[in-house]
Image 1 (cartoon, rainbow, N blue to C red):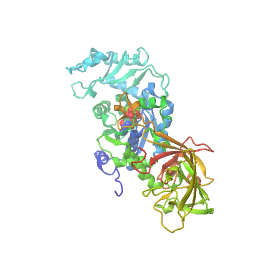
Image 2: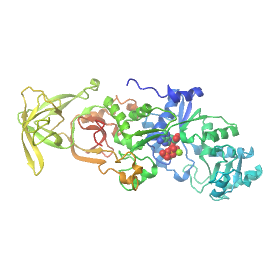
Image 3: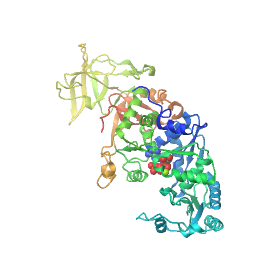
Image 4: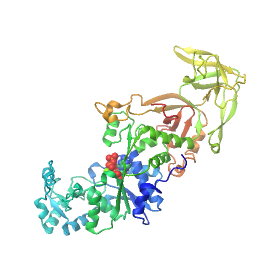
Length: 556
Ligand code: ATP
Ligand code: MG
Ligand code: MG
C-alpha cells in the first residue's frame, strides 16, 4: 500500500486550512471532564493536536467544565494522561471556568446591546414559542420586550441567588424567523444549585455550551475550531454570538464522528458493565475506552495510524472492531520483538539431548532488533495442542512416531511414548530425529526453569456487531468467553531483555512519551498472539494480555 497519506496535507483538513491559511494555527481539544475518553475521542485528539502540529501551531487542552453536576477530578487527570500517551503536548491546559468572570461580563454586554433577555418561561411555554409539535408559527414571549435595565437587574438577581433552578434563564435574542432551531433564542445562562470543582460556591448561574464554546474559542484566539458534525446546525449561533459581541471570530468546521461497531462506548453503558462486574473496570482490556485500549497493550502509534488510515471528511465513519485489530496487528508486526511462550505446557523429555545455548533473533524480519541467548534443556515444554496421542497422515505436529521441528533447534524431535493421568497427557518422551528430513512444521517451546506467567486471552466482549440490538439490551449480547485465563503459561528467558528494553525504539515516538507503563512491554508470542504486560503484574508475578491475535480470523 506504500506510504500512508498525511491526512493534514490533502483532503478535507487541507481544504479547511486553505479556507483560512493563517499562521500561527491555533486549535483546541475541548472535552467535558465527565467521563473517560474512548476511541472516538482519539480521532478528535488526532485532528486537533495533529492539525496544529502539522502547521507549526499550537493546540490547547481546554476542559469544558461548565456543567458542574457531572464533573469529577479523576477525569481531568485521565484525559490529560491519554493525550500525552498519544504523543501530544497541549500548548496550555485551560478551563472554560477560567473565563467565568469574562463570560459574565460578555453576557451583560449582550443584554446592553439588546441581544439577550431574562426569561421565566417553562419548558412547555418555550416549546409552544418554537412552534410546538405542529411546527406552527414561532413567537417571542413578553419577557423579550423587557427593557435593558430590567434585564440587567434580573440577570444580576439570578447571579445573586434570587432564583432557583428553572425559575429564570438568560436567553439570547437571535432570529426566530431563521429556519435553524439553533437561532430560536437559545439559553445563555441558567441557574444551577451546584458546587463547581474549581469555583466552588461562587456562582449560582452557569453559562451554556452555546454561550461558552464560541466565546472561549474567541478568547483563546482559536483559528480553526474543529468539531464533529452534530454541531453543524450550531455553527450559525456560534458565528452570531461572536459577531454580536464584536470579538475575534474563529472558524468552526465539522468532521464526521468515528463510531466502532461490535462494542459500546456510551458512558452509561460502560458504567453498567463496570458496576455489574462484566469487566474489570473502566480500563478493562476488552473496552474501547482509551485507558482500556492502553492497558490491553495497543501502542499509541497504532491508534494514530488507524485514525489516519480512515481519513477525515465530513462523513461519519462506522468501523468494525476487526478493522482496528488489523491496523494494530500490522503495526505490531513492524515494531515488536518475538519470543516463545507456551500457554498450556506439557514436558517433553528428549532422551538423547544435551543442554546447549542457542542464539535466537528477536525478529527474523528486523535484524536490527538483535538476538538473545536461550538455554535449550533436555526437558522442554510444548503446548498441549501441539501433541496428539494418535497420529494421522494429514497431521504435522508431534505424535507417537512422528517428528516435528522445534523453532531454532538444529534437529527435529520424534515422540516415542507418553504418560497420562486420567484423560490428560502429563509427559512425552522423545528422541532427536537425525534422518536429515526437513520437518513440515516447527512448533514453539520453552526450556526447563523458565518463568511461569498468567496469560489473559481477550476475545470480543460482545457476540454481535450490534450489541444494542440484542433482545433485552446489550448485556444480553455479552460473549461468555471474552476472557480466557491461562494461569500456568511459561515464557522463555528472553522476556527479561524485552522488558528491560521496552518500549522498543521501533515503536515510534513512544520511547520518550509512553515510558514506564507495563503495557509498553510488548512482543509477539510466536504461534500464539501479540502480548503485553498487564498492570496487575507484580514483582514476582507476570500477567500478560493478548493485544490481538496473529491472524484476522483467530479468536473470534
Ligand atoms: P461522548 O458523549 O461520547 O463522551 P462527547 O461529544 O460528549 O462524546 P466530549 O467530551 O464533549 O464528548 O468530546 C470532546 C471532543 O471530542 C468534542 O469535540 C467531540 O466532538 C469529540 N468527539 C467525541 N466523540 C467523538 C467521536 N466518536 N468521534 C470523533 N470525535 C468525537
Ligand atoms: Mg460533548
Ligand atoms: Mg462527553
